[in-house]
Image 1 (tube, rainbow, N blue to C red):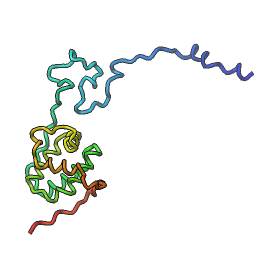
Image 2: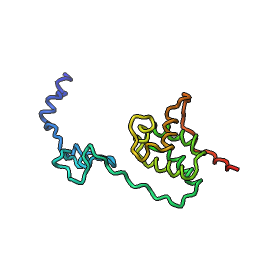
Image 3: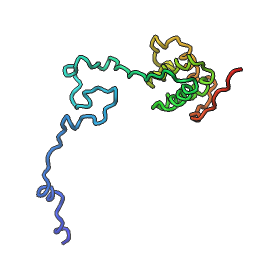
Image 4: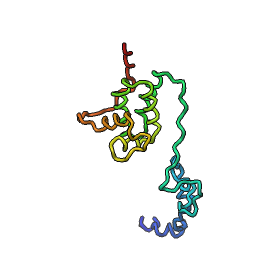
Length: 179
């Protein structure tokens, strides 16, 4: 008796709901949160064919230009050191964070002002590039290939002593001035 009072789902669909096939528009396929260096056609939902791409946009095989680093002229040595400690920890990829933060913990106290400025320029490079150069998975560009700084970073990445590395504390002691 109760079964006859409750309509079946098929009956409900037929009477009360209009069933239409799903349609996927280009607007529905558009990426609502495009990444800074992603293909601009992804944000609009248009196809990424070479015919629809303008001449000013790089193709998939070309490099997107890196943003210009901030001008940090006038920073004193202690400010540069503190900023570098922070920047090596907060990169965005855990692998690079771990590699660079332990490198900074070990090597930054020994660095002079010019070497810290060079390290600062290295940190302007993309995370994965620094990581791959350090672990010998990609060839570094000519501007970094034979630098002593990258050699030290590569030696640190080898971890020949098989040391278990963990993120260092953010607050580090200032190096003792040499007498």
